[in-house]
Image 1 (tube, rainbow over the protein chains, first blue to last red):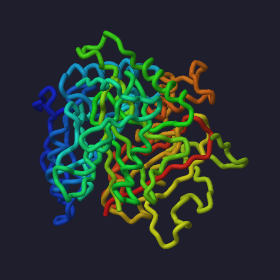
Image 2 (image 1 turned 90 degrees about the vertical axis):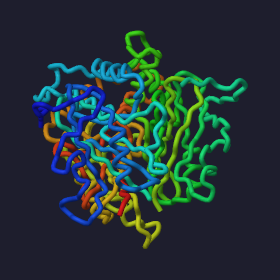
Image 3 (image 1 turned 180 degrees about the vertical axis):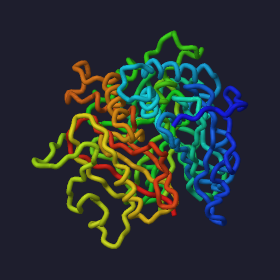
Length: 171
Length: 171
Length: 171
């Protein structure tokens, strides 16, 4: 399951890194398997840089909404991993992210008492606490988020190369 | 970010207070910006009365479903704040709400060890635990909830004047 | 609220038990109340076997998607109980489920300090932590889940006979 960062990967703090797949940053956007068919799901590719980290993916999720051309509806962000999740929280002060991750770690420390042999049970538990998906309203083509809200991909067992699916439903 | 309750606000225990915006309780229902266009999103306005509180908004969410005229589909409740969330839990015995809030506070106490300067990191963390949105099935025009379920707006850093968006998708 | 298992119920570990209602495993599939009308919501019936347990319902949710005939869209799983929830996590190693449930119990122990008289406040709190619903993308008629992901019905106050609603929206 574990994938390391490719050598030479440029990873900026607080900036999501879209690792290059066959279609670039968006894995399924071109729908190579079924040419001519629109694809409802698009896949962000994110290279995380630490074991535990919150990566702001709001701008990339908005780009997906832009591509789908749906102006009124719902946008769903789904993380297909069991040691990474997604949450919506404050983007203004990075200290908030540190406090969230620090407190989550104090609630669910990485320790030896767990039975699962891979040593990452804490990450699985954190996922069930934060959740694997988020739903955001889309209005006039824009994600409806509060002033201080961002969508964060939550890495709990990195660094890894990760995926994050985005689907927009509406009109 | 913080907004106090207006002087003289009438706030009943266990009763949501819809503060009056330009359109009354529902901020966007009339869609003043684009007359003639239906608006998928409606916005509840809630005045909370304590720092931490669960406000039952089920009846108001149902009213939004009624207005939309959609009988089969999904209703999504999104909180556009980072120190308030939403959860679905028991509405029968108010002690359950006290137990939930009390235990959440014991898991995430308000203390000085957090880095975020505003002193409300505990509220941010509680939001990532309970979540910022809830999705409820709509059938025959009614929210599909269990006998004991209500939708609760979760205030974690009040009292404040809050918003809560509701969108219904379906047929 | 509490319902015991019927005598003689056959309950296998790690296998969901669909208890027989009037329509068999899927309560509303035939829409007896409105013949001829398609029903968007279908209801799984699950007999849990322990007080706290994660039941893998992925195959049954996929069957619901198959029945609906929707190939591109969203599948929403909603639990209509206040002492049971739903989460997505690893299905490969059962130790992960034990670690999740064990740690949740250490975070929210069943104890006497709660005010709610039924003695199951811990279950209510666990529901607000894991959530009452999950949203999964549907593509080409299949639930879009990662290699290690399964959808788990989370029993926190069993054993009981439970329901779980599934709705698919899309095209």
